[in-house]
Image (cartoon, rainbow, N blue to C red; front, side, top):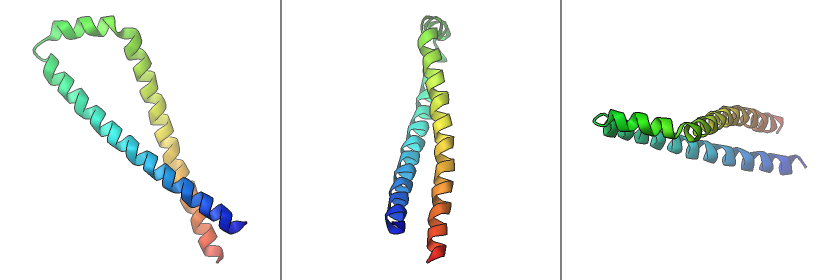
Length: 94
């Protein structure tokens, strides 16, 4: 039974690390997009203001989704620490 749990913990740890890597890539690409938007709208400030006003509800929803994703990212980091500790404890038992 302990070997089964150890394997499940390893699988879950691998999944968590893969998810963290995917989110890291997503956040990096999101930063690049923000920089590109800033550069584009430097010459068109009026258009940027109009679009921001028009899309207030959508931008608010996107902001809350972003906050939720950051929360899940931090929670995933804690889960990785806990799983690593559990696996280390199983290794120490042997």
